[in-house]
Structure formats: structure tokens, C-alpha cells
Length: 212
Image 1 (cartoon, helix red, strand yellow):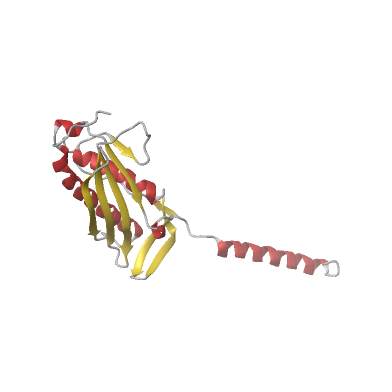
Image 2 (cartoon, one colour):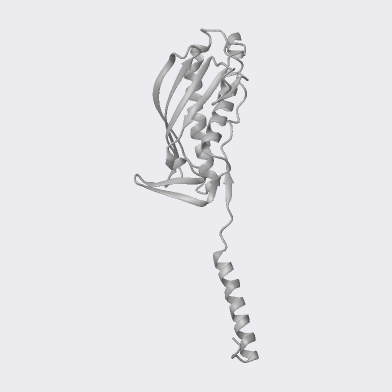
């Protein structure tokens, strides 16, 4: 640049600085919004029996398909096409958020405070263990939520108490924005937890809790 006159040199520097600033504006990413699933807003159910109040309920493992095991919220646009939103993300991995919410919901629905999340210490034992394999948990193109899962329940001795079942739950979105769609996912998960609670409730009066 030593051969460029001073005036032109200054103009060139200003031009380059402006170009850098403009590029910075162009490359600025949109702000990211974070979401999480929450427990049902419902009154706590009294224990269905004295034994149920001392029952220890294990939640998990809860397995997710790889396409859901990511921070971005997923929308199913067609049966074969998914949209991943970089500006709308989960505040924590779904593999941690879902089991915790399932545990909170079942605690309220069944009236027990003794919830263990997988993996729990080997020194702890459970009276029942809820195992879940999530197949679908996303919004459709119209915003409606869809949850499809396989689940079963083991007893204290490791025997299957409730054999594997395929469940499907859906919920409409109150609004088409992302918050409304997450609320729909939350509603579908809550409906799934009610199904588990209703299926397990008859078993709770049969045995006694471990008292751990």
C-alpha cells in the first residue's frame, strides 16, 4: 500500500472497515429460545393403599431414537422429512427431561414420593420399574404433538408385571408458535403418564412396599 496516496489509503481503510462491520451484521445469528417439559399441573392423588405410599418406583431406562437425541426441536414436515430448528432448542437433553417429568407425574398420580431415576445406586431397590422406548416425540407440520412409545413394567423380583405395550398419544397445539407446540408435547407426555398410572394402580394394592 506504500504506493497509494494518503487520501486514497484512508478511504480504502474506511471501506475495508465498513465491509468487515457489514459482514459481522450479516453473520449475526438469530437469538436462541430454550424450552423444557414440565410436570402436570394437577392435584396430588392420595396413595391408593397404605403400601403404595411406601412404594419405590424406578423410572427408566427411557430410550430415544437418535433423531430426537439432539438440542434442536424437531418438526415432522412429511413422513420422510424433518425440520430441525437451530433457534429453538431444549434447555436440557430430552433423555434427561422426559424421565424426570415422567417421575414427577407418576409421583403425583400415584401418591408416592419415592421415585428413582435410572441409573440408580446398586444399593437401592425398586418395587416397580417403568421402562420406556420412545419411537416418536415431535410436532407435526400443523403443530400438533405426537408421542408413540413402547413401555413395560417390572416388579421387585425382575419379573414383568405389565408386558410391553405400544401407546400413542397426541395433543393439538393451542398456537402455531414454538411455545404452543412445546405445550402440546407436554400435554401428550402427561396423557401417556396417566395411562401408565391407570395400568399400574391395580397392582399397587397387591404387594407391600420395600420401605427403602
